[in-house]
Structures are given as structure tokens and as C-alpha cells.
Length: 226
Ligand SMILES: [Zn+2]
Image 1 (cartoon, helix red, strand yellow):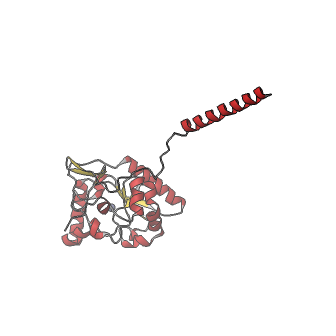
Image 2 (image 1 turned 120 degrees about the horizontal axis):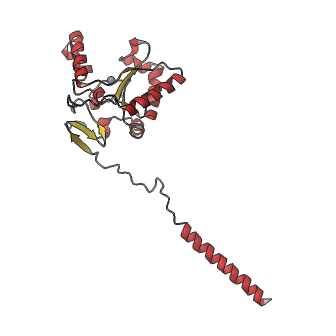
Image 3 (image 1 turned 90 degrees about the horizontal axis):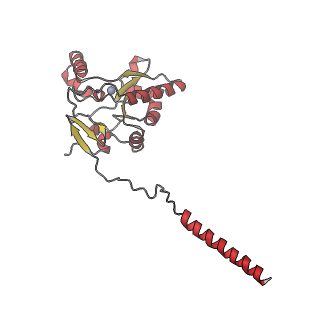
């Protein structure tokens, strides 16, 4: 009888020991959570200029100060275009009337655009809304303008009040686009509010910029100082 009790006790001890060892051994698989991921929030963005083209953290950058060379002709970006088509398709499901009104423009195309505006509106006025050749984001192949079937609203601030623009402001980032020149940020972007001008930056950055209600210049500390 005593012997049997001893066997049971020893068996129990062995089982306990094995359980403890296995808990220690197998509980060691480290699962990172957001708590442990260190984001380089204060890290400075990485600037790089190759053959006259400026990249910031891998994104091509062009604005009133930073230009692209005439030789930079990447054409329409395939990924951006695919994402834009998806966006348009989704908007149609919601019975919206969005359409692409403008896409890739080379340096030379922009020259023609500017010249024709200058003829019609004069130099001073044109300078305010049209980018100089080399300074248009459309030269990156990553920028598109959208509008509706009603041409009166296209390229006009009234576009902001259409249900299409409201939907766009909410959902563009889902497809990796930002409203490149937001309202009230003209002094930072250098351009008037353009609710129709989309720039592809990928969903991750688009979501961040959207959430922070900011723009590429402020986000990447590119504003002219002083
Ligand atoms: Zn545009």
C-alpha cells in the first residue's frame, strides 16, 4: 500500500516538473506588441538627390522650391493608376460621379499648359495657380486630378462642396492618395487649396498624413525657414 502511494506521489511530482519545464520552455516565444515597437518618431527624414530628382524617405518630391529636371520622364505610375481605378470603381458603387480629368504631364507638356494659360490669363495670374515647368507634381506620374461630369466644378473651389469631393476627402487615403494641397495649408505647400489634386504616396503614409491633417512639406520638415 505504502509503495503504491509513493509511486503515485513520485508520478505526480514528475508530471508537475514536466509541466513547469514545458511552461518555461514554450512560453518563451516573444510576441512583439505595439508597446515594444520603437518608432523613430523623431528621426529626421532621409533626403537624397539623384540626377536632379529629390526623394524624401523614398518619395519623389516636387514643390515650388524643389524642381524636377526636364529629362525626368517616368510616365504614369502603374501602381498609382491601378489604385486610382480602384478608387473610382468604389466611388461608382456609391453612385458618385468621379472621373479622372488629368494625369501625367512631362516637363514639355507643362510648358505648353503654362504658355496657353499665360496667353489667356496673363503671367501674374497664371503663376498663382499653375506650376512652372519642372515644378508640377504631374511630372512625377504619381499625381492625378479628378472631377465630375459637370465641368463647371472641375478645377474650381466649388468642387469641395460636391458629394464626390467629400467622399474623396474621407476615402482617398484608403487607396494611398493624399489631397496634396489641403485647405488652410497654402503657406506650407505653396499652392491654393486643390480638393481635386491627388498624389499617390502609398496607404501607410497617406493614412498618417490624413490623420495628422498635414501635408508633405510639414510632415517632412521641408518648409523654407525664415
Ligand atoms: Zn493637379
